[in-house]
Structures are given as C-alpha cells and as structure tokens.
Length: 389
Image (cartoon, rainbow, N blue to C red; front, side, top):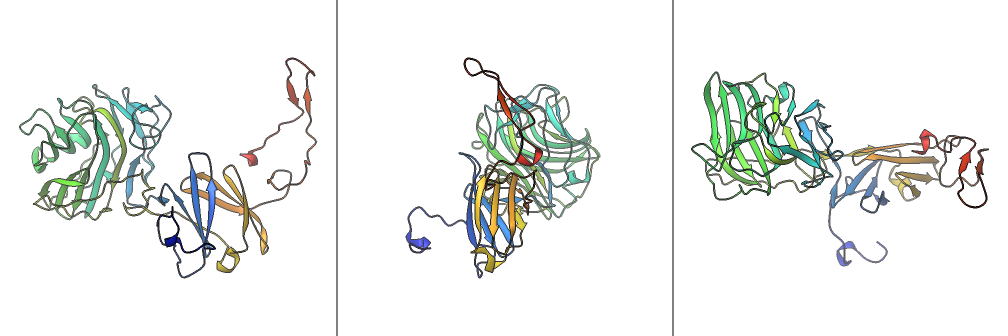
C-alpha cells in the first residue's frame, strides 16, 4: 500500500486471506446502491466477492433445503434456495411479512391457526436418521408459549414421524424436544434440561438439531440443551412440515426465518451427555456467512492472470463493471445476485451501449408535444433493449 502497511492504518479490519496469497491480487470496489456494496478480490484467473464483512459463499450439495423467507410483503410465494430446489407450499394464510424479520427483507408470518404452515413433499432429503451426520435448523420467534409448537417435522402418520418441537402442555412444560416415532413406538427422544432460559415469547431463537453419528443434540442460540444417543436409521414417507406437526395440530404462532436442512456437520458440533457443547449461530443469512456453516466460497473463473492484473482499468454502470486491458478486448462483469456474477466479452455493435461510447449512433428521435404547459415526449422508437438491463 502506498501509505504503509494495513496493520498501521486506522479503519482497517482483517477479513480473509486471499485464495493465492503468494501471488499478486487486486481489490476492485463495486457499489451497487447506497446500501449494497462489494469488494472484488481479483486474483490469478479468478474473482472472489466480499460483502458485509465476509466472503460471499454459495450453498453446497449437502444443503437439502434453504428457506430465506424473503419475498414481497403478504406474498405466499416461498422459494427453496437449497441444492435440490424443492417446491414449497404456503398453506392457509402463511405469508411474508416485512414488519418483523431476522434477516433479509421479510420473514414467514405464521398465524398459528389450523391449516397454517409450510410444507414440502416427501423426499429422501428428509431422511436425517439414515445420515451419518445431519442438521435441521432455523430462526424462530414464538408469540404463544401456551400451546405445543412444532418447528419442523416429517409426518407419515401418528405412528411414524420425527419432530423438533416446544412442549407447552405436557409433563415437560417449557422444554425443547426432538422425538422420533416408528411403528407406534417412541424410538428416539431428546428433552432439554434447561427450562428457565431460551423460551421467552417475542424473542428470536436459533434452534438446531444436530445428529453426529449416533449422538443427537438440540442447540438453542448455540448452546447445547439436550442429548440422546440412538443407532436407529428409520426413514419415513411423509412431507416435511414447517410450523406444525400435521395440518391440524401443533401450529407455530409467530415468525420463522432462514430454515435449513443439511446433510453433514457444518458447525463441527459434538453433542455429549453433559450438554457442554457450543456452536456459533449464523450472524448472516446463508450462504453469505463469511466462513464455515457448510458453505463454500463463490468464485468466478477469469482469463486475467497475475501479470495482467496490474494493467486492468474499469468503470462501473449500475450492476455492470466494464473492464479494459491492453492484452484483450473490453469485457463486462455483470451481477444478478450476491452469488451470481458473469463475465463476457463486450461487443461493439448497435445492441451494446458501454459508458465509454463517444457518440449517439441511433436515429431515434424524441418529439415534444408543445413548448409550454403540459408537454408529452414521444419517441420514434423504443429507447431500451434487453442488453441495457
């Protein structure tokens, strides 16, 4: 750096080592709006992207379900951003709400009435007992602690299901629980030991079930609160229900956000009989968690090698960065989402309007309807095409 090392300059924060720290890299700023900005790590034939103090990550093949619960206010359209891309059904009056959310623009508003829940069809992705390691998690905000509340379950029938839930009416009132019933018998049961904490209404809680080999642990805000061990590997054929046990029982009243089903042990959990394990809850929505959590770095391959990086110049227009180099034709780097970028050669033709085009080459005319008063401007042809978006 021209004014001294980073360690001697105020305002700097260490984020991450570059992918190829033994080689030259360049940092390219990219500001999409007043609230969204990135730093691009341009290295030897690659680019990585940073935002919100961490590296932009992408889901891996073990992410079987990922509900960001982001959408238009009052919309019932929920999208699975996991590796499989399941169809999610919002039943009853479940909808997005902008008023209360943990991450992003909205959360899922769960009214708590019969028939209000999210569901995903039966799939082998829900066979968590048969996995060597698995994790079921989400952020939940309960507004009613007087009714049994099921966070996530796979329900085949009353004799065959698994469920992560909050007991409000049974013998363990105020406890977080995980239960598995097979052929009418309760084969797995984990009940939290702590009742006085982590169960207040109107607070967000990160609740996670971690299976590691034969050990099961329930974690609330990162702390282990329950343990059991069992070698059963039963599978069921019912749908995955989020916010209930069945369509008519155990409904969640409140909000939920960032729900995930993962095959593996992304947080290196180690549930034990003493309930002494602890993991760190995610501080950002998946997969943009900086490091860990089962995500991998989002990376874009480029043709800019180490020697060419110092020759690059660029100019940004909206969500496109135009890059020039003496060694090749100009290219445009385009962003469509946090983990969706593309780079391509820039063609100089009538369909491309780079910011450095030096004159207007179209014959389109704009004609005013008057010179004073209310004026309407009419174009002789469309002023925009798809390449400008």
